[in-house]
Amino acid sequence: MGILAATADERVDDVRCDDQNLIVDLKDGRTISVPLAWYPRLFDATPKQRAHWETCAAGYGIHWPDIDEHLSTEGLLRGAPAPGWKSAA
Image 1 (cartoon, rainbow, N blue to C red):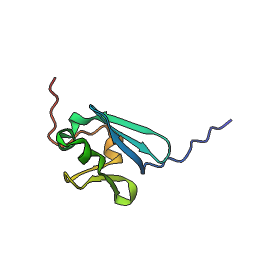
Image 2 (tube, rainbow, N blue to C red):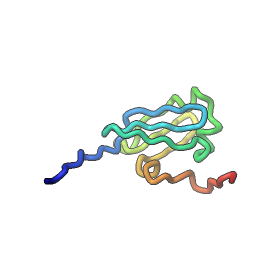
Image 3 (cartoon, helix red, strand yellow):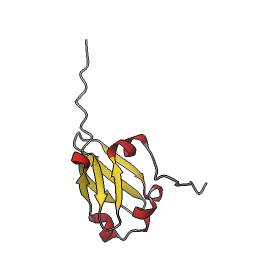
Image 4 (cartoon, one colour):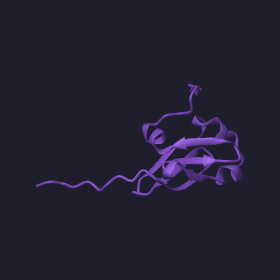
């Protein structure tokens, strides 16, 4: 008996932030949640700036024009923080 996996669709469906996390919903139903602290531009942005996002790279990326930040779903799925990010621990 075989099990068929649904086709992954890693394009962005929705983006939101709470006080500590960036939360990205994908078209295939998955949700990615990563610490805002991993992305200093987003962490330092106002809630209004964080809420102003658009898709880019054919839906596989997110762009925040007010703060010139770009993230890819590939990087988010890999758990990749911003280059140069250092943990406080």
